[in-house]
Image (cartoon, rainbow, N blue to C red; front, side, top):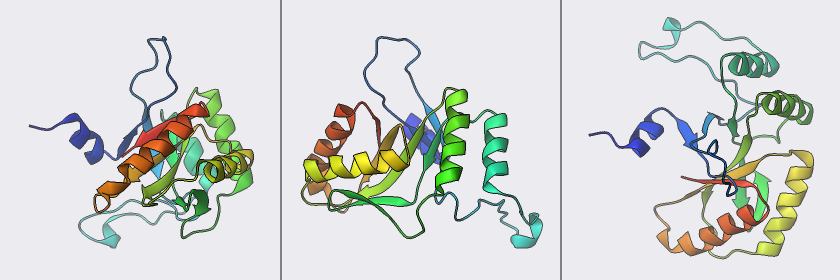
Amino acid sequence: MLTASFIVSLLGLVISQGPPSSSASHGLELYKEISYPWDRLEEPRSIKGGEACPVTQYTWDFYFKYLIENGVRSFLLGGYAMVQSMILPRYYPPWDKAGFKALKEQVEAKGGKILADLGMYEDRTFDKRAFLESVTKFIKVYPVDGFRLGLNPAYPDRAESLREVLEAIKEQNLHCSLW
């Protein structure tokens, strides 16, 4: 029997919890995940090999517009990590500021949201002041609606610290997602 979390994982979808609300419209939210926006374009893949799929040549503006026109309202954008209670670019360059602004406008027009994926949480301790300063700086440049973090199964002892992070995110009236 397939569980809901397995199905969500299988489809590559993300579930988010927003600020508390009495509105019946605040239920399950689905997000399109893009691991490294404005750096590595997604492309079709085939089990038959690279020749079975067409070569993709498109711009990020075209791609985001296409997704939104086809019903995607909310996005989970990767490329950042939380290290020593600060939000830092992971392996790739920072997001494109003009591209993010254009995407944010399109997403807001559709009533959607953008979450920043901060990857697996591995810090032993949490410095709330440093984190909130980092969040303020990040949101000033990239006004996301919230953050997603995961707990590395190799470090279950960090769950309490992660709980503090998620509480700090919610205190800022931002969405938080745990995976």
